[in-house]
Length: 219
Figure 1 (cartoon, rainbow, N blue to C red):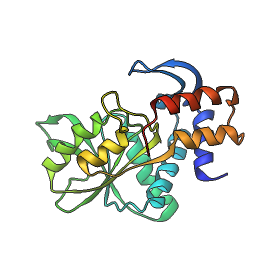
Figure 2: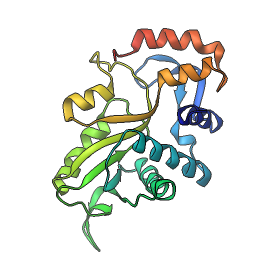
Figure 3: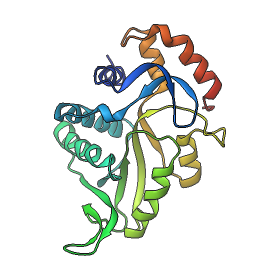
């Protein structure tokens, strides 16, 4: 198996990737759902970090620091930083933001590495639906220092058009902010994995392809 196929099987085994009839936050009816809240053990995080690390390496993203937006991004950035060291011998920093600035103790908005001008930062997130999280954290990062955002890594690119645009959230992020968003896998990879028997779900293939045809953004 390729690392992408292995990741899709990992998602299915963890109950993160499921098939059926789901109503999404957007109101769309989808034949699949990704619930990253089902990553909930140390083993899950250790494995997940390896896939993030491989995606970072595969896409040639340069990083001094991995940033995990609070709250979901915090354990993801930590697991990815550990995996980069254990798998590739790369020692990178990590940091995350507070929802509110701390006015006592060490104070500040960030925990972990304190950012400096010119620092290369990769943002680690689970999924990207609308780009709202990126829109919120970029001013915080740039407000802390003149950092270089070299990329953002997510687990799955749904490759869906936004409600108010023909572009996907990933495409919009690059157009609006110049941030390259890399995903471990895309919905097309998941469809291929079902067709190749990597995961079950062949009864949902027609529905998934129809959904992709209806809502998919152009590459």
